[in-house]
Image (cartoon, rainbow, N blue to C red; front, side):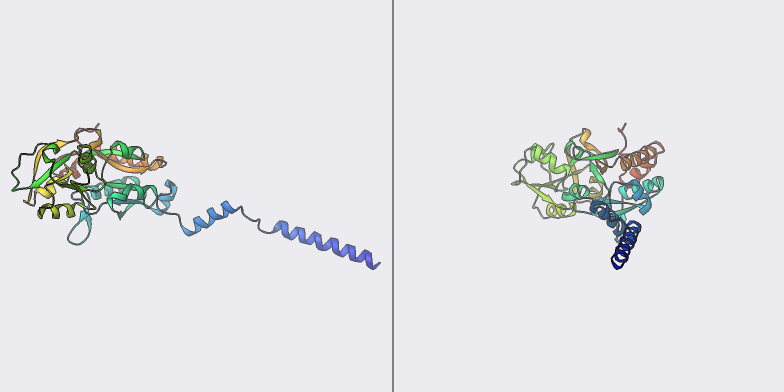
Length: 287
Protein backbone atom coordinates (compact mmCIF):
# COMPACT_ATOMS: atom_id res chain seq x y z
CA UNK A 1 0.00 0.00 0.00
CA UNK A 2 2.79 2.35 0.90
CA UNK A 3 4.62 1.41 -2.30
CA UNK A 4 1.54 2.21 -4.45
CA UNK A 5 1.07 5.57 -2.73
CA UNK A 6 4.68 6.42 -3.37
CA UNK A 7 4.35 5.62 -7.10
CA UNK A 8 1.24 7.80 -7.45
CA UNK A 9 2.95 10.65 -5.64
CA UNK A 10 5.91 10.37 -8.05
CA UNK A 11 3.62 10.41 -11.10
CA UNK A 12 1.82 13.54 -9.86
CA UNK A 13 5.13 15.28 -9.15
CA UNK A 14 6.55 14.51 -12.61
CA UNK A 15 3.32 15.60 -14.31
CA UNK A 16 3.37 18.90 -12.45
CA UNK A 17 7.01 19.42 -13.32
CA UNK A 18 6.33 18.88 -17.03
CA UNK A 19 3.43 21.34 -16.99
CA UNK A 20 5.51 24.00 -15.29
CA UNK A 21 8.41 23.47 -17.67
CA UNK A 22 6.13 23.60 -20.72
CA UNK A 23 4.57 26.86 -19.60
CA UNK A 24 7.84 28.53 -18.70
CA UNK A 25 9.90 30.78 -21.02
CA UNK A 26 11.75 28.93 -23.77
CA UNK A 27 15.48 29.36 -23.97
CA UNK A 28 16.40 31.57 -26.94
CA UNK A 29 18.99 30.41 -29.46
CA UNK A 30 22.28 32.18 -28.83
CA UNK A 31 22.20 34.26 -32.03
CA UNK A 32 18.59 35.33 -31.44
CA UNK A 33 19.41 36.32 -27.88
CA UNK A 34 22.35 38.38 -29.11
CA UNK A 35 20.11 40.18 -31.59
CA UNK A 36 17.57 41.02 -28.87
CA UNK A 37 20.33 42.32 -26.58
CA UNK A 38 21.67 44.42 -29.46
CA UNK A 39 18.26 45.97 -30.01
CA UNK A 40 17.93 46.76 -26.32
CA UNK A 41 21.36 48.39 -26.20
CA UNK A 42 20.73 50.46 -29.35
CA UNK A 43 22.10 49.79 -32.79
CA UNK A 44 25.12 51.64 -34.19
CA UNK A 45 24.78 54.45 -36.71
CA UNK A 46 24.59 53.07 -40.21
CA UNK A 47 23.28 49.52 -39.74
CA UNK A 48 21.53 49.56 -43.14
CA UNK A 49 17.96 49.77 -41.86
CA UNK A 50 15.99 52.71 -43.20
CA UNK A 51 13.33 51.85 -40.63
CA UNK A 52 15.96 52.36 -37.93
CA UNK A 53 16.94 55.69 -39.47
CA UNK A 54 13.32 56.84 -39.42
CA UNK A 55 12.90 55.70 -35.83
CA UNK A 56 16.08 57.50 -34.77
CA UNK A 57 15.07 60.52 -36.84
CA UNK A 58 18.59 61.09 -38.17
CA UNK A 59 21.30 60.13 -40.61
CA UNK A 60 24.90 60.39 -39.35
CA UNK A 61 27.22 61.99 -41.93
CA UNK A 62 31.01 62.02 -41.95
CA UNK A 63 32.82 65.11 -43.26
CA UNK A 64 36.03 67.13 -43.28
CA UNK A 65 35.06 70.16 -41.20
CA UNK A 66 38.01 72.30 -42.36
CA UNK A 67 37.16 72.29 -46.06
CA UNK A 68 35.76 75.64 -47.20
CA UNK A 69 33.45 76.32 -48.92
CA UNK A 70 31.91 72.84 -48.60
CA UNK A 71 32.04 72.31 -44.84
CA UNK A 72 33.91 74.45 -42.29
CA UNK A 73 33.52 76.35 -39.00
CA UNK A 74 32.47 79.97 -38.59
CA UNK A 75 33.82 82.28 -35.87
CA UNK A 76 31.35 80.72 -33.40
CA UNK A 77 32.45 77.19 -34.24
CA UNK A 78 29.24 76.38 -36.14
CA UNK A 79 29.38 74.21 -39.25
CA UNK A 80 28.59 76.16 -42.42
CA UNK A 81 29.09 75.72 -46.16
CA UNK A 82 27.68 74.27 -49.36
CA UNK A 83 27.36 70.70 -48.08
CA UNK A 84 25.82 71.87 -44.81
CA UNK A 85 23.10 73.85 -46.62
CA UNK A 86 22.52 71.02 -49.09
CA UNK A 87 22.14 68.54 -46.22
CA UNK A 88 19.58 70.79 -44.54
CA UNK A 89 17.50 70.69 -47.73
CA UNK A 90 17.91 66.92 -48.01
CA UNK A 91 16.79 66.63 -44.38
CA UNK A 92 13.54 68.45 -45.18
CA UNK A 93 12.84 66.20 -48.15
CA UNK A 94 13.50 62.85 -46.49
CA UNK A 95 12.08 63.73 -43.08
CA UNK A 96 15.12 62.98 -40.91
CA UNK A 97 17.87 65.17 -39.48
CA UNK A 98 21.53 65.10 -40.54
CA UNK A 99 23.96 64.64 -37.65
CA UNK A 100 27.56 65.57 -38.47
CA UNK A 101 30.64 63.58 -37.48
CA UNK A 102 33.96 65.30 -38.39
CA UNK A 103 36.55 62.75 -39.50
CA UNK A 104 40.13 62.70 -40.79
CA UNK A 105 39.85 62.57 -44.57
CA UNK A 106 42.42 59.83 -45.09
CA UNK A 107 40.30 57.40 -43.04
CA UNK A 108 36.85 58.64 -44.03
CA UNK A 109 35.97 55.71 -46.36
CA UNK A 110 37.24 53.15 -43.84
CA UNK A 111 35.13 54.85 -41.16
CA UNK A 112 32.06 54.63 -43.41
CA UNK A 113 32.64 50.94 -44.06
CA UNK A 114 33.10 50.25 -40.34
CA UNK A 115 29.69 51.89 -39.66
CA UNK A 116 30.90 54.91 -37.71
CA UNK A 117 28.41 56.89 -39.79
CA UNK A 118 25.81 56.31 -42.50
CA UNK A 119 27.09 58.49 -45.35
CA UNK A 120 29.88 60.89 -46.37
CA UNK A 121 28.77 64.40 -47.35
CA UNK A 122 31.94 66.36 -48.02
CA UNK A 123 32.47 67.29 -51.66
CA UNK A 124 33.78 63.78 -52.36
CA UNK A 125 34.98 63.01 -55.87
CA UNK A 126 33.42 59.89 -57.34
CA UNK A 127 36.58 58.41 -58.82
CA UNK A 128 36.81 54.78 -59.87
CA UNK A 129 38.70 53.41 -56.87
CA UNK A 130 36.05 54.79 -54.53
CA UNK A 131 33.17 53.54 -56.67
CA UNK A 132 34.55 50.03 -56.30
CA UNK A 133 33.93 50.03 -52.54
CA UNK A 134 31.01 52.47 -52.05
CA UNK A 135 28.00 53.72 -53.98
CA UNK A 136 27.43 57.41 -54.65
CA UNK A 137 24.19 59.35 -54.56
CA UNK A 138 24.29 62.08 -57.17
CA UNK A 139 26.39 63.52 -58.65
CA UNK A 140 25.51 66.95 -57.29
CA UNK A 141 28.44 68.89 -58.73
CA UNK A 142 31.58 68.94 -60.84
CA UNK A 143 35.04 69.71 -59.48
CA UNK A 144 38.29 69.45 -61.39
CA UNK A 145 41.63 69.95 -59.63
CA UNK A 146 43.55 73.23 -59.86
CA UNK A 147 47.01 74.48 -58.93
CA UNK A 148 47.38 77.34 -56.44
CA UNK A 149 50.63 79.21 -55.73
CA UNK A 150 51.57 82.35 -53.80
CA UNK A 151 50.68 85.59 -55.59
CA UNK A 152 54.35 86.57 -55.94
CA UNK A 153 55.24 83.33 -57.74
CA UNK A 154 55.97 84.27 -61.36
CA UNK A 155 57.20 80.88 -62.55
CA UNK A 156 55.61 79.73 -65.84
CA UNK A 157 53.34 76.91 -64.62
CA UNK A 158 50.80 75.34 -66.96
CA UNK A 159 50.66 71.70 -65.86
CA UNK A 160 51.98 69.49 -63.08
CA UNK A 161 54.94 68.66 -65.32
CA UNK A 162 56.13 72.24 -64.83
CA UNK A 163 56.39 71.54 -61.10
CA UNK A 164 58.64 68.50 -61.46
CA UNK A 165 61.68 68.91 -59.25
CA UNK A 166 59.64 71.05 -56.83
CA UNK A 167 57.81 69.97 -53.66
CA UNK A 168 54.03 70.33 -53.87
CA UNK A 169 51.28 69.70 -51.34
CA UNK A 170 47.73 68.42 -51.12
CA UNK A 171 45.41 66.61 -48.73
CA UNK A 172 46.10 63.01 -47.77
CA UNK A 173 43.68 60.65 -49.51
CA UNK A 174 42.33 63.38 -51.78
CA UNK A 175 41.77 63.52 -55.53
CA UNK A 176 44.71 65.94 -55.59
CA UNK A 177 46.98 63.21 -54.23
CA UNK A 178 45.65 60.79 -56.84
CA UNK A 179 46.38 63.26 -59.68
CA UNK A 180 49.83 64.14 -58.32
CA UNK A 181 50.89 60.51 -58.07
CA UNK A 182 49.52 59.82 -61.56
CA UNK A 183 51.75 62.66 -62.79
CA UNK A 184 54.80 60.99 -61.23
CA UNK A 185 55.13 62.74 -57.88
CA UNK A 186 56.37 60.53 -55.04
CA UNK A 187 56.84 60.85 -51.30
CA UNK A 188 60.11 62.67 -52.04
CA UNK A 189 58.38 65.64 -53.66
CA UNK A 190 54.78 65.37 -52.46
CA UNK A 191 53.73 66.53 -48.99
CA UNK A 192 50.39 65.29 -47.71
CA UNK A 193 48.28 66.89 -44.99
CA UNK A 194 45.30 65.87 -42.88
CA UNK A 195 43.59 69.20 -43.61
CA UNK A 196 44.14 71.91 -46.23
CA UNK A 197 44.85 74.76 -43.76
CA UNK A 198 48.04 72.91 -42.80
CA UNK A 199 49.06 72.75 -46.45
CA UNK A 200 48.55 76.49 -46.96
CA UNK A 201 50.63 77.24 -43.85
CA UNK A 202 53.51 75.36 -45.47
CA UNK A 203 52.92 77.21 -48.75
CA UNK A 204 53.15 80.51 -46.82
CA UNK A 205 56.44 79.41 -45.27
CA UNK A 206 57.99 78.18 -48.52
CA UNK A 207 57.97 74.49 -47.58
CA UNK A 208 55.97 73.67 -50.71
CA UNK A 209 55.83 75.40 -54.09
CA UNK A 210 52.16 74.79 -54.92
CA UNK A 211 48.93 73.23 -53.67
CA UNK A 212 46.58 70.97 -55.64
CA UNK A 213 42.97 71.48 -54.56
CA UNK A 214 39.41 71.03 -55.85
CA UNK A 215 38.41 73.80 -58.24
CA UNK A 216 35.33 74.78 -56.23
CA UNK A 217 37.42 75.12 -53.06
CA UNK A 218 40.05 77.38 -54.68
CA UNK A 219 38.06 80.69 -54.65
CA UNK A 220 37.84 80.63 -50.86
CA UNK A 221 41.65 80.67 -50.65
CA UNK A 222 42.17 83.04 -53.57
CA UNK A 223 39.97 85.71 -52.00
CA UNK A 224 42.44 86.03 -49.11
CA UNK A 225 44.72 87.82 -51.59
CA UNK A 226 47.64 85.52 -50.77
CA UNK A 227 47.24 82.93 -53.54
CA UNK A 228 46.44 82.65 -57.23
CA UNK A 229 45.39 79.92 -59.64
CA UNK A 230 47.87 79.00 -62.38
CA UNK A 231 47.86 76.70 -65.37
CA UNK A 232 45.24 74.35 -66.68
CA UNK A 233 42.61 72.50 -64.70
CA UNK A 234 43.66 68.93 -63.93
CA UNK A 235 41.56 65.89 -64.69
CA UNK A 236 38.22 67.08 -66.27
CA UNK A 237 36.52 63.66 -66.52
CA UNK A 238 33.92 61.59 -64.68
CA UNK A 239 36.24 61.45 -61.64
CA UNK A 240 35.52 65.15 -61.19
CA UNK A 241 31.87 64.53 -60.30
CA UNK A 242 31.11 64.78 -56.58
CA UNK A 243 28.47 62.82 -54.69
CA UNK A 244 27.34 61.44 -51.34
CA UNK A 245 29.09 58.18 -50.45
CA UNK A 246 26.87 55.34 -49.19
CA UNK A 247 27.78 51.77 -48.27
CA UNK A 248 27.08 49.29 -51.07
CA UNK A 249 24.39 47.39 -49.15
CA UNK A 250 22.32 50.50 -48.38
CA UNK A 251 19.93 50.55 -51.33
CA UNK A 252 17.17 52.46 -49.54
CA UNK A 253 19.59 55.15 -48.35
CA UNK A 254 20.86 55.55 -51.90
CA UNK A 255 17.37 55.81 -53.39
CA UNK A 256 16.18 58.38 -50.85
CA UNK A 257 19.27 60.57 -51.33
CA UNK A 258 19.13 60.32 -55.13
CA UNK A 259 15.47 61.38 -55.13
CA UNK A 260 16.35 64.43 -53.03
CA UNK A 261 19.33 65.43 -55.16
CA UNK A 262 17.36 65.10 -58.40
CA UNK A 263 14.51 67.21 -57.03
CA UNK A 264 17.00 69.87 -55.87
CA UNK A 265 18.55 69.98 -59.34
CA UNK A 266 15.14 70.27 -60.95
CA UNK A 267 13.81 73.10 -58.75
CA UNK A 268 17.07 75.11 -58.77
CA UNK A 269 17.89 74.66 -55.07
CA UNK A 270 21.36 73.26 -55.76
CA UNK A 271 22.14 76.13 -58.09
CA UNK A 272 21.12 78.67 -55.44
CA UNK A 273 23.33 77.01 -52.83
CA UNK A 274 26.20 76.86 -55.31
CA UNK A 275 25.95 80.55 -56.20
CA UNK A 276 25.85 81.44 -52.50
CA UNK A 277 28.97 79.53 -51.49
CA UNK A 278 31.05 79.16 -54.65
CA UNK A 279 30.01 81.99 -56.94
CA UNK A 280 29.19 79.78 -59.92
CA UNK A 281 26.94 76.81 -60.62
CA UNK A 282 28.82 73.54 -60.00
CA UNK A 283 25.81 71.58 -61.30
CA UNK A 284 26.39 72.81 -64.86
CA UNK A 285 27.35 69.96 -67.12
CA UNK A 286 25.58 67.31 -65.03
CA UNK A 287 22.98 65.12 -66.71
